[in-house]
Length: 168
Image 1 (cartoon, one colour):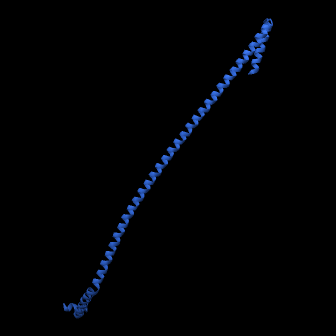
Image 2: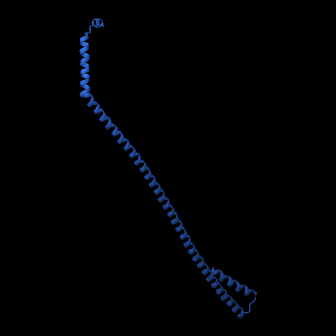
Image 3: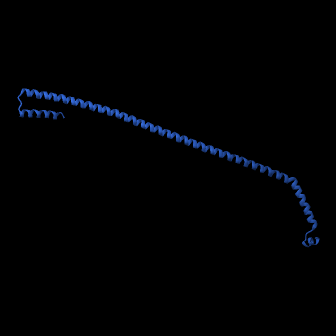
């Protein structure tokens, strides 16, 4: 084996010194550097896990808040819809009440007008009757005062009809 090393130009003592130096460096680094690096990595890993846990909690809280927000918006929408429906119902009821009152008032005015027409019609009939009676009395008195023949009778009837036409 030494012959192979010599053929390659490698000195076994140098290899042994390098192996011892490497092992010495490995033990020194392990003793003074490896543990602090591992502790640092473990603490960093713990910090990252804590941050992830806090982020997960924040995410869950955000989801709860979002669900609460959506529920509240839904409640507000329901309340607004209910309020709008109540107001529409009240408006319809008010409109119906106004229409009913207007119809009732119109009916009262209609009855007043009908009563006034009936009263005027009754008065006109009374005046017409009184006038007819007066004319009849006038005609009768003239008939009694004069001897009436057919021509006089027709003339008196025409006068009576002319007076009636003048009333209309």
